[in-house]
Image 1: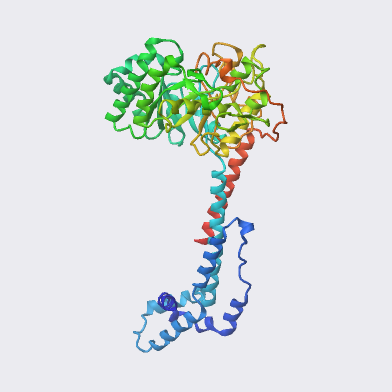
Image 2: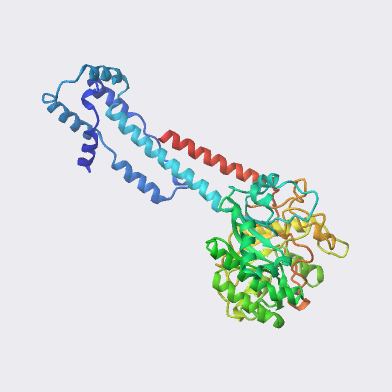
Length: 519
């Protein structure tokens, strides 16, 4: 190692450095200056392995002996060197005051190692901040006449840390507004367009008009074909949904987009005949045939199975039997599946695992399951028990906290759970009960509909017309009535999400400043 440093040091123009730069007094004074303190692991959250690497790096820095040997070689070869030109002498004369001593060079190298260590620590803090926050997926419905323009929605979505949006159409204003933002989009093909997509030429034309022009600037990653088709009791739509999916998939392949855009269709939870206990989950027998064909297609192309699940409907249908804390992710004794012994402390996860069981019963155990809609209304009619701002805050806030922890369900603890909460805005033109117009995280003016616990996690919503996931039969949703054991507290307002974003930006700026000092 000494010979390596000797080679490096020999490249320095030491013969041009004034002798006074190497006087023992000056050199010793510089060496006696206190070294930069090494940050402790506790102070910078740096692993012992990184500190050990830094120490090893210090040991390999050049010492005074390396520079001494270099000076001796320079002096020994001075007589054989060709004389310097006048221009060289003038240049060296100008540079003499600025040329460093050997001790100074070593000290700067030590300082550089400290700065490098600090730089890595700040990077670790920034990356840790990002990793602690899961992305939020939000359904962006637009059945309203008072919503802000898509350009104004962009900063609103960014302020809550959302990285995924789900549309129910292919609104060009929205897709253009979010170009270059890295927000991933799921776009929708309405039920009314399913029949046309059976024609490969029309499917190709639709993609060329509604998808291809926005790629790759806008990150469109998924197309939903229809919405809750199988539970609408419309035999024509049911017959068209799979051919439409196949038509779009074939058109995507022709355009070379099938590797970046998937095709799927969302289902209501009402496709289940049995959902409790979760291990007994089973699809409706009258839907088994069309579902199996759809599942075969999705398994072949690798697209996720989508379910719209709303524990609110179960509570609304039977508030005396369904325990409120169980549906709001609040503290409660939970329930145990008698067949598997798995414990469930919230209804949504029980519903998800019921779907997992139903998929497994048809031979599709490994198919990815996403929750394309879930949420809680902040307002409802007199008979819509539980539709309050406080319950909406608890449901969506607690769900986001759970998603931030990247927890799977009891049946799939390591599963890739992706959830969208309903919805970005309250939509004043939706039909149906009052709750349908009050699922939004935000009011149309961009202010929060209620103080929400935002941990930078997964959120989302629904923007469809009509009923959402439907009210499953009582036997499918009823749970034992555990006694309340308290509630979680400490919810944060949406503005705290902005503050966390600013904190991450501050750490990033500090990191850049450190790099500037280092290099």
